[in-house]
Length: 314
Ligand code: NAD
Ligand code: SER
Image (cartoon, rainbow, N blue to C red; front, side, top):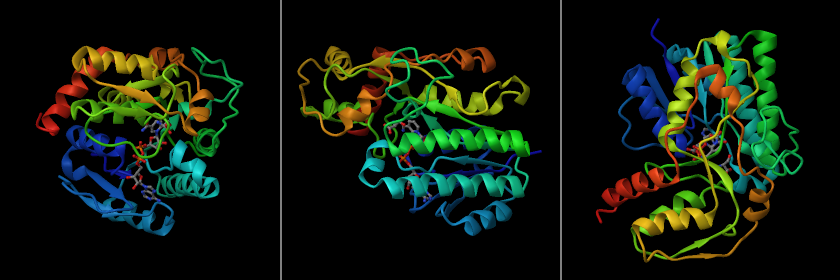
């Protein structure tokens, strides 16, 4: 049977790219993009949807006879700290709406991304294992830990096939990030191609796990295509690509743009970054569904600069 996929939060940093990839894989008309705000340049169906409106979500699932939902709408780590109750409400209520409609309408699969933000200061700071102490420092992280456990609950209690990845910071040229702590690693490339100096909001020596967008999209599609009986993790899979700090990404860019200058002025996001691990053990993902990243830092830098130079016509 042909799947019909509803993407919730399709206009975001990941949603914009993932929607195109899903349309490529499943057919343009079979992927319905939805977001709070109007989106331009949609090649397929698009609907305005506030994921907090459970009735509106149910109507769309029925209207398009959706068989899968990719639930990407969320308030990310840095924005969430500015208004914790609002972030909790958006992240949890939207997830419950997605899980409930998927259970009631018997959807075949649900995708819900989690994050490295589930880890806090008590988790191992490097090569953090799949099963770690999860005491996050941010409301965003708390919502992701809760979300992972609800995903697991719906799978075990109702048999709903919910799948999830703990994305590291995602870096891509196609879209801009939406209020996270890892956003600097996208912004910095935009400044470099425009020959502008960049002021980084993290210290130069702050390592974080990161992943290039093509690898993130490939991981997502691979997980969602994997046979259900090969998946041993029903909370959320650790996922790793590369680790670098702001000093190292600057040095990588300077190999291509020698005059690029970066200064460092840490703000409230430093404490968030300091609470996250530097690297992640993703051996469960590798073993269960064959995950393997393709891009390292320098390969990503070359690709980012190539595409951004085209975008800025420089
Ligand atoms: P984003 O902030 O760029 O995009 C979120 C999208 O959701 C936006 O288009 C926004 O308009 C929409 N949205 C917000 N509230 C909504 C609502 N109530 N109803 C409908 N749409 C709403 O986020 P992203 O970076 O694309 O992240 C997508 C998912 O991946 C999130 O769940 C996020 O937690 C997770 N994630 C992202 C990263 C990353 O580095 N980008 C890392 C780890 C996890
Ligand atoms: N990139 C995300 C953030 O910084 C991690 O989930 O919030």
